[in-house]
Image 1 (cartoon, rainbow, N blue to C red):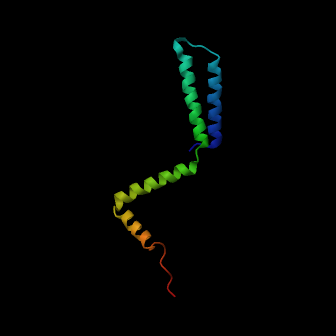
Image 2: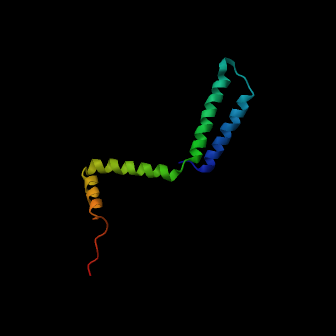
Length: 96
């Protein structure tokens, strides 16, 4: 994942290129198309700056675990659901 400062620097470069293209005209409508692409890149950079990295990693972790467990042990989720219903999970109690 890119660092926040790197994303801010990238957004600044895109914004500067967009400003430069606003003042120039290129043949065959190239400057207009470049401005459209840079507008989209600015919106994407803004979105990446507002996204929380932990939320992304957490969602990925759950999917990866699910994929691993269904390939190795297809009954895993059935067993843990049964333990949740009977409050049977966790560490065993210590013997006195």
